Image (cartoon, rainbow, N blue to C red; front, side, top):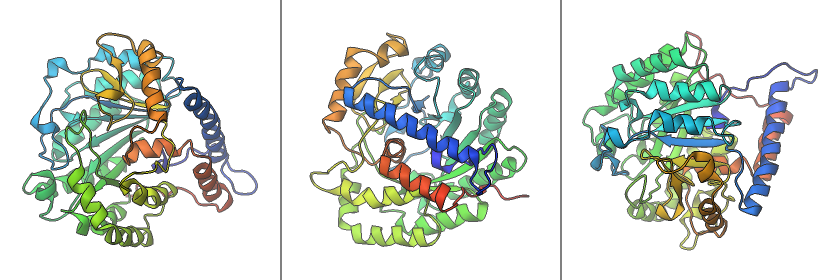
Length: 391
């Protein structure tokens, strides 16, 4: 979710261009060169993005995910020592984004300690958390714990798929639409007094809630926070189900979905990454899909499950498992022959997905996208919006 951050400009040139924005573009260009070399050689690269699932315990009953049916045993979940091993790896020193997810990550009692472990090792990365938003009091308590033990920018992303009674159809919690709004609004209020805290709203497009996309976007705009649209994905490991039914619905209603995308763009959902993701969406629905974006999962990003298994990405199957933190240190896994074999499979296009976080990472290594974004930011003078309005 790098594109949703406020740029940390260090000054402004005479022509009005923020020097910090220029530096960011050059850093991304240098990462792109290294990433392309890594992908060409099927060799590891320094990680830009890391997703760490801390638990499969969850208090929601989502239709697009079966994690809640198979909760993890807390004693079997990834440990602080294993998290410390990853944080201190030479491959994570330049990490830009760390995503702590679940299940419901707030159910980890030591969530703040995990965040602090990465904060001490990688103070310049931003830490992103995803919550279902169904526990307003616990959310605010965990955020205070995290803020007190870290120095990083913290993004708290609340999943809001509906603001009406259809929320129960999606998340399986009657009345949950009231709790998620209480959570989001409580976080926004806290962010007014804490510059490091940023708030986002995540919306997942499904048959049950397509009518809620625009209302949720407008709700995010009223709060002054980031809105991100996700589409359904599946996988044997993380989601524990395949998205065949929803994908078929996407294909049957593609014209309606395209019209919705145009409506969202007209209403202000028009960041470069959002535009690109909506543009390539139809290509992922083809019977023999052409991968419209070169995939860098397993090269510059990876996913670590709650049992310490290292995969290329969130929707990966067991075939894309590189190793286990219970058996080897992260550096050994990332540079292993098994990891090389998995990367070669990625290069052969043996997988295909449109998971927003994976595609977003890969777009950061797309020359055409980087040029488009640089033009928006530097030439056209477009600047990221202020996400939290003054109180």
